[in-house]
Amino acid sequence: MIISMRIANLACVAFVAVCGAAAAIASTHAVYAQSRSTPPLANPPPPAPIQALGFYQETKKVTCSSTFCLDEFTKIPTGKVLVLTNVNCLVANDQGGVVWGFVIDNGSVVGFLGFSALGAGPNFAPPDVYVSNQSMSLVLQAGHTPEVSVDLGTTQSNAEANCTIAGQLK
Image (tube, rainbow, N blue to C red):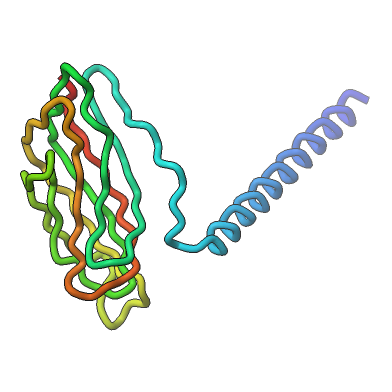
């Protein structure tokens, strides 16, 4: 009797595990199918900046339909400075080509970004994907609004720029 109860328990556990895995797979498939049906340039609400032990990180995603994309980040709080140490961007562009990027502080260009192609050119279907990961040491003052501008060249295109700035908030 004990052995048959153990077998029944194991069968029940196995059934739940298989059903749980099947549900997880179905759920993942539904999420993937939904994300594939969502237009690729949709903009979800941006996450709040992360601030912990003086570390600062913020990500912004912007859709653009001109020759440049401009990601505007949160204004630096009164009484603080942001020592910007890293900027990275991932850009998807339906017309190809990311020429360069700029870090802008209070309307002035203070840093430059170079981009590398991850998947671009005649052998790839649009959108072409470009990435930049730039280390820097820039001090941005209180009240200033950091911005990242990505120049897409002279062709008007539909693009999406997902950029992150990181550093120390002091």
